[in-house]
Image 1 (tube, helix red, strand yellow):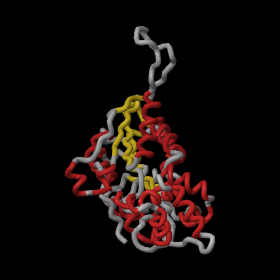
Image 2 (image 1 turned 90 degrees about the vertical axis):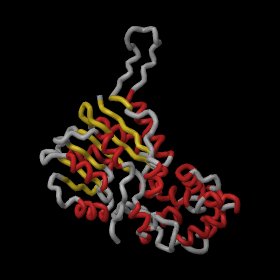
Image 3 (image 1 turned 90 degrees about the horizontal axis):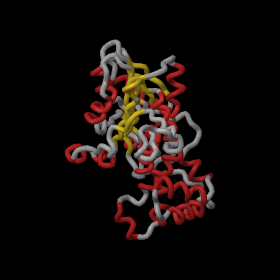
Length: 309
């Protein structure tokens, strides 16, 4: 299947990076390289783009999409390891970093990957197909309490306890192997009125995917590491797609900006507040009405930008 992924908030992100033509930039979630292609168009041959992705299919597609450019390094890895990746490349600082979080359109559309609640496919949901933990293992091995907590916390599903209970009841007789089996269990777990709020399995599938790929826990530290790797004036652009991601990014930005707690009448700061830089947009940037109509994925997208001191 062809790797198709329409970049969200493209103009806003490229503008937010404030690209220097000879600079070094990192796309920590390379995907189909839609954002990266626009970054490279603004770079001179002296500039460099480092593209990181944990999905081999994405890296393969990116190489094809960016074959006209020579100043690109492709890294199979996780953006949570950005500090270690740059150390290995002997790069101390960069001019800008982009993180476009969440699952790509390709991963959702490629049904055999098990990300989608549509169709009947093996429960997988791994962004990096070389890792061991899959959705199938989580659904069949996690305790009822742990499942309920994950579905509630990561999926914000208010019927998480009933869903977890029914999953555990079902698997007593048979291992849950496919997305269709899981969807049917979820559907039976929800009251009829809640099914008017979109597909009944949407929130649970999101929660399981986040757990499989460990998308939330490291995010705060990843943002702090990215900020530390920026040169003075360098920028970090992060696109999120749900409230948990956005909250982690927002909190990391606020802490990195630092907050003086001294009384306002003091002539200078004595509380020791340290600032790494400034938040460029206090409110997240969202897609235009036109983009939201053209690309439904952009409807929940939020862009936050931070500039290093």
